[in-house]
Length: 250
Image 1 (cartoon, helix red, strand yellow):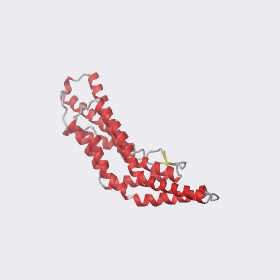
Image 2 (tube, one colour):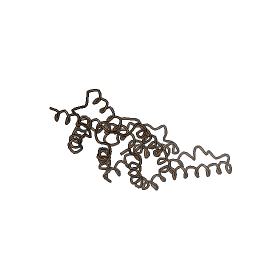
Image 3 (cartoon, helix red, strand yellow):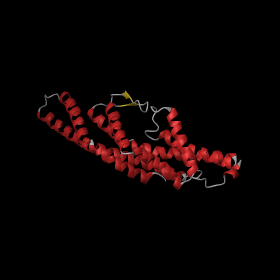
Image 4 (cartoon, one colour):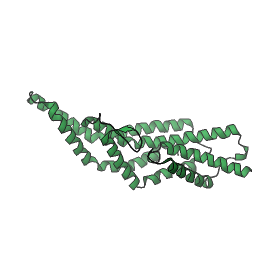
């Protein structure tokens, strides 16, 4: 009976961390993925890790309030891991938001079928391209490796302190902003140069309708710069993995 209780408690703890992780992590947490598939993946992984990773304590001596506290801690840790990855992953979408505002697509809104949220057309396209590159580079294996390493560093029932988790989320937010600015910097520099050229033309030819001329030039320059600097999104994959290794509390 005690062995059964120990196995069930270990399974619940592992399932809680993995479910919370998949709830917010990109790709696995999309609304477009059926709930049955999500539950099946989480359950299979939980059974595997509960067998491979033993509990670091005697489950037979754990009371009900202590078990509830352990489950809550596992949920917090899983959510923190998934949130850190989601923040780093959002750098591509945020960088395209900067570009869209320069082009003039800020008012364009479409429904993202993956997340169920409203987004801009260009941002959705660039995010989709990055996701394809991420999956083609076996990025989903990287996410599974994060779960495995988390149990090696902190077995079920033991998690980092709240300060460590909070610092990881804050640093991930800072890394997201820095990475998005780095990705959008070449395009923003090109638009700054365009604004200077248009300002000079406005001074040379005051009768010229700069607003009418600038609209097609901004759109054309935006698409041209995106095509030129699209390969730099591929290099962000390696930086994405480095940021995960540095920021994740594992």
